[in-house]
Length: 212
Image 1 (cartoon, rainbow, N blue to C red):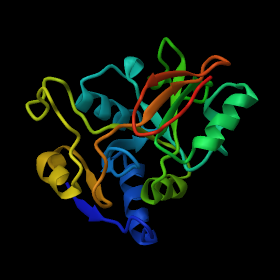
Image 2 (cartoon, helix red, strand yellow):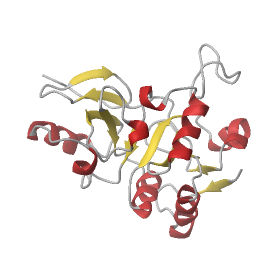
Image 3 (tube, rainbow, N blue to C red):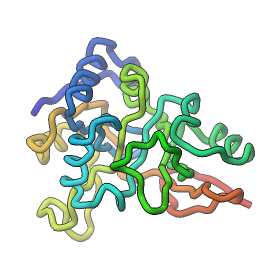
Image 4 (tube, one colour):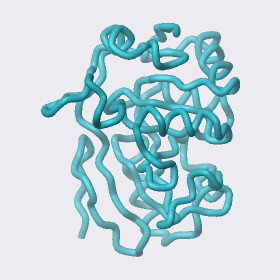
């Protein structure tokens, strides 16, 4: 259990490296994004993925988990080919508060291959999140900061905590590291299903988008 404050605009390289070391060792972290604070781990560490799913009270194959990427350069590693119009849409909106659902490629870890065979892709407009991913050299598995529905911390009317120090106080004991990067948002990302040629809005969140 550790709390690490990182400058939101100019993340310190040595602190980013500390986060990467925790991830490489199979740790599960809480970290800032451009929407709500998220839970993250290395996509290549099955034990860490299982720990995230235990905390969320979900089956990995049924979970709505996303890959947080530094940019779109490695998109083809984890997704099947898709229409150029979808790429233009993503390129226009990212980095930003969006999750784009695409068809998953065979490179997605077996533990995460759902029956739908899809993957959510995020490129948050947050320097800390993107620098962590860049330094790690691959995406991190990410989900919103809400644990199992029966957790006493999360009752009806729950709002995502936005103060990292409060987050550390409430749930830091359950995680290997809480990364503080300023006050967060309590509005999650906008989710767009791009598994077909015509994108479909699944959840309206922080990101504004107009679809024909």
